[in-house]
Image 1 (cartoon, each protein chain N blue to C red):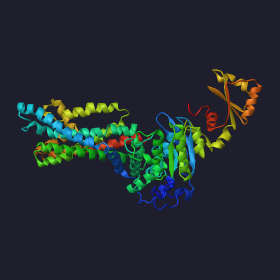
Image 2 (spheres, one colour):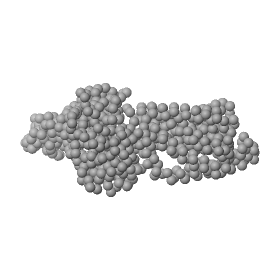
Image 3 (tube, helix red, strand yellow):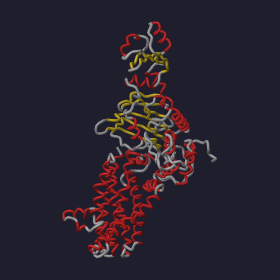
Image 4 (cartoon, chains in turn cyan, yellow):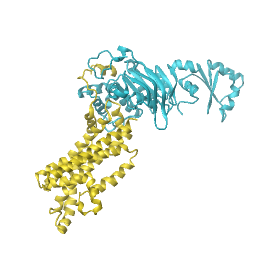
Length: 329
Length: 277
């Protein structure tokens, strides 16, 4: 179908954006494969990201998330399958697509010897933006990233959270239609993560399409409207966080820790209490709609675990159920 | 600022700029390296002024006194006059190696600058060209400063000597582009140390820089002819002395252009294979 090519980022006319005009998916992948000499990182995935949504790739390390992101970012050619980003083909239109993307890589690629503002100035020029415009934007973006008072500091000594925010600010210099974030908060302390999430929420409200990878289920639940769960290069589930939980887990989970070296040995004692039981090295997870009822049944049987905790199901449980493994090992 | 409070996304979308180009091209890459260089330029400027002075004083006058007394100079000129164009060529070689080794590897591996660049509309060609254009700036600065010092010391015997500056810059570029390709192919920095030890150093010593290659054992002379440095040295020396013949200079320059072009093509290829996977 004929698709109006997207405007280059600094289109001064502010014409209706590609996404609102056509409702075409921002990203569409069909049977997408990335194979290296000795292994297949991405093994035939289908993905569709809609305008304005926050879309997540959730999975453990090595699941193929970053390879997927690099293909979408047009820095890694797909081995097979179809991929369309912003209505264009990365094989032929890489530079034009990249002009409309903002990329926050897994590892910061900031110029640590330059100052905070110089980093944005230099980066803006890669997109061919006029110097004056870049300087204006840099000031606004630093405001947005809460780095205005550090504008003239050299990057090197800044905290991890600040560098991450600067990387995001830098990725926005071309006012991208899609912001790709590869594990945006890995390695940050909890407070820095919350500041970052808050900034990403603001971008989402402004209509920027967010695509992120993470192996933190709380991050996926916080940020993503929709996500796919990846494992061994394949998509094992897809949906909104709540739908995935409803579909693949129970409402509540009762976690039990026994005084034993092998929790599998205690399986028989909890038989029938929950719909499903998962065995982890250090605890049992009892999946049930009503955690408290399960706990009373435990008491009735005279079982006395070292610790018992009722909690809501999370994406972690979904992942565990689908793959038999935990996300962060 | 009137707009404070509006979001980054909207602000950047309706900001009015001129008609945008798709990419800043290699010039944007050069701008990056120059921005980094601005933080250290003073140190390197002093170095590029002092090092010729020290070299010419130590080698030219110190060692030169022995040579001149013992052998009456080389090819009929005092040793300092003989050695100055050689050191000029060796200096651009050093700058070329210095700017295309650790910075290339670092941009791939350590600070990942190239990953950042290639996430934008820039391509591998822009990255290599922009880097080499920056090296060209550095080479020109070093060669001009050296020439100034050498001329002030009276070692330039002819106005043709001025042409030794672009020749030395070209010689530096010829090595830089090849060295770039080599650095981009390495996965760790051990290979860089080896390169300095087994390529830069021997080339500096045995390419007619400090003594005529006629002094080398016969089998080594053709090796010297192959090096880009010997061609830079020989061309610069005849220009300094005013004994250059146009045919010889053209041959030297043509040979250096071949190295530069071949190195550039190799560099683009290697970096592409490294970064676009």
